[in-house]
Image (cartoon, rainbow, N blue to C red; front, top):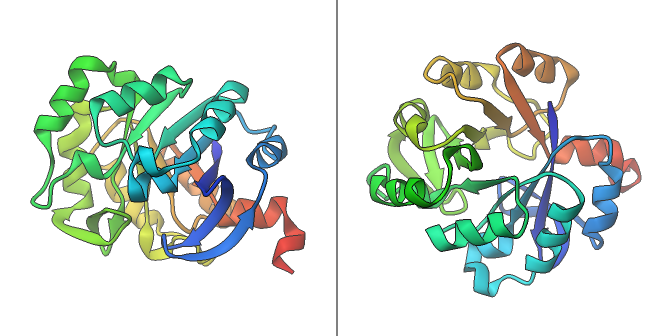
Length: 230
């Protein structure tokens, strides 16, 4: 399954290269959602909440409306059990927990156990993003002394699905690493949504053969809004 990504910043849809350089900005998130009508699910990331916390984000009404119109998995700034519950109460199909699942030394089991007490496992996704084969958190600016595959294996009891962005290729439209995702499939049977540089039909088919979804950003925007990439 292909899952388009709607990343929100200052009430607009944006696409960033490796989480830094802005390459695309669209002013109407609901119009973007209409363009993605054929897809069964959408991935929504509140970048303002991820950077400054939920209180600093102006995107909450937009996220709520997106969730009303389409099944959405939602992430960005999920730093507490209360925030995760709030996002689900606003209509998210699943909540994506990223940096809060980790400490600078490794996995934050205390937080994950507290999350498991309050939220059904089937509503929780954990983002295990990879830079150079290591877990990267805090907007991909902090790289942990923890291999991505090792983290996935240890986190399996605390979620129903993984999201993993291959940061090395993210936003570059140059293809992804199927070998990276194959290494993750070897350590878990849970569903995995792959992201980061996925560009071609062949890559989508290869991921599908591994039983993985493809979350797509820049490549799908180039296809949907070709006039912006001339």
